[in-house]
Amino acid sequence: MNLARFCLAGADVDPEKVALEVIGPGGEIHETWTFQRLEETILSVAAGLRSAGLECGDRILLRIGHSSDFPLMYFGAIAGGFVPVPTSDQLTEAEATGILVDSCAKLILHDGSVEIPKATQIPVWGVGQINDLKSSKPGEFAASGKDDPAFLIYTSGTSGTPKGVLHAHRTGQARLSAHEGWIGLHEDDRLLHAGAFNWSYTLTVGLIDPWIKGATSVIYQGPRDPEVWPRLLESSNATLFAAVPSLYRRILKYGDVAQASFPTLRHGLTAGEGLSAELYRDWRAHTGRELYEALGMSEVSTYLSSGPSVKVKPGATGKPQPGRKVALLRDDPNKIEFAKTNETGLLCVHRNEPGLMLGYWQRPAETRAAFRGDWFVTGDRMRADSDGYFWYEGRADDLMNSFGYRVAPEEVERVLSEHDSVHEVAVTETEVRPGVSLITAFVVPRDLAAFNETDLAAYASHHLADYKKPKIYEVLEQLPRTPSGKVRRKDLKRSPQNP
Image (cartoon, rainbow, N blue to C red):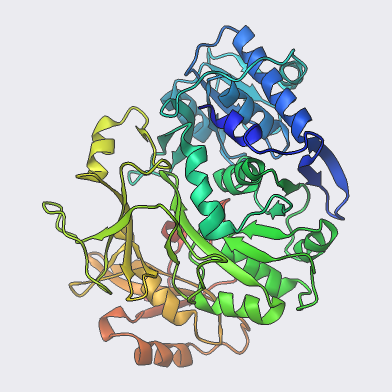
């Protein structure tokens, strides 16, 4: 089983049907790729890489910006039996160098638009050679096995050093559960994804999923201003839209949105960070459309979600997708005991899940440590209610210590975000003096002039146990975020005048 072949040749689809549209700010079409042209070009890339003397399983570092060349090189490498290493265009030279060294890549594909690793003996192929790859004579898909390495992605490590997560060709099969349990994907859908080509969320939900189903992927190139998205949703005739929650929030705040907007849109999809009940309700009230959330991670395909077949319970992530084997284990690392209903536990996925990684690249000890028996421990803390819905209670390594009690920041954030004056909020511990840290809430108000810290503190006192309440409130214009939209808690700083 070859992942690229599974995506491109599995669906019974008209070869002349559009597989990919790249659009501009006004919805104008910059590029159109039919399924036939896409498959032929990807097989050309595969053949060109083989002719360079690369061996099956060799890693190829992709340093390419937000262009269609990224998926062409990515899937071309997979089609040829090689292992692409996708990287964000936001990486610095030093960060790219660290990944290059760790991955032991044999080739760098670089389009000149992003930072490249420091001087190295590894061959670097530029724009001319990328174009040569695309014009090579098409070859065949490599006869890869379902458990053979397919791609290597890097994720933040607890030590602060990114670590590689190696995935197999079987990953494509794992996406089928998401089609039913989250996306509600149909062959005639047009899925607009807000992410860049080089983001794993885009590569899976934005490209792999539509192509497996024979649907059309729509990717935007242009300024990322929030007010552009309502126009794009209409001009592109998108039936599905995928983004992070923070973008939906910005669309509501800065865009012109009403229930008559983007009439072809069936529903929205969200992942990458938690979807608050307040944002979900705001989106429903303004647009009249559903917003379905999914939880996944670099090590595992998405596995918990709401969707057309799973009614949304505001504030809850959703239920396990069809066929997923998910459990909540109690904290004791020496036992395998399952948490009871409404008892918080560690979210785990069984090792036979096809979307689970092969392991951490060249880190066998860390791979073994990530398992408890047959269960991969995700590090997420959740509880399951009597209806089978899972509620996110934070990362195990994000837990705060408040006077001997462990507190998940997400629990506090969920309460504060329900207050009418709060637009966004992030909670973490800040050190007020050596050895003493207090829970601090960093608040982005809806109206800065009208914001009243005392009112919010009183609200927190009413809804949270004393040890869970923030002791400090900081007002910010915006929260620090990663390029993919996640809040960077470690970058939150307390102002000197607020001890």
